[in-house]
Image (tube, rainbow, N blue to C red):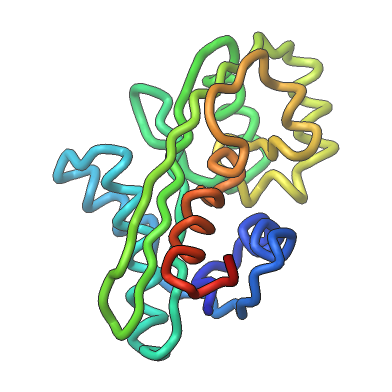
Amino acid sequence: MILASASTSRARLLRDAAVAFEVVAARIDEESLKAALLAEAASPRDIADALAEMKARRVSARRPDAVVIGSDQVLDDGTTILSKPATPEEARAQIRALSGRTHQLISAVVLYQGGAPIWRHAGTARMTMRDISDRYLDDYVDRNWGRIRHSVGGYLIEEEGVRLFSRIEGDLFTVQGLPLLELLSYLSLRGIVPA
């Protein structure tokens, strides 16, 4: 089994669940694909699914005998879809925009084998961020920039980012970027991992 993602969070979730896999990061231009899908008025769920599928397809073309896991996450704040912040200033702007509001995290996973999709799922979590003071926001980004720069919305819920929230509705694995329970159920049902 191959994880077609360089995400340390997704790899950690699979390792912690005792799933044997190797990482082969798919090199795709996520921003261009996302922009094209937005231009076509694709839904946030469809964008997450398309990004996950592109990763799985790319790696499956090179490794057709393997089961390839492609996964991606989209943050929908109701008006736009956020990407990973490129700078600390952008992280501050994202968190400031989300402060005191509810947004959705959509995590999609697509499995490929033999160059074709064999299963897909998208999970959604609703995240309500508390009102964040400018002082705390500045300190938070300064302390955590090295880790949050790889995360849409500028937070990692499994770390200090949990302090930004007043309510989370949905599966914690979906929040972390991989709908793990549904994935494990499918892999067990198919006999790909022991049940």
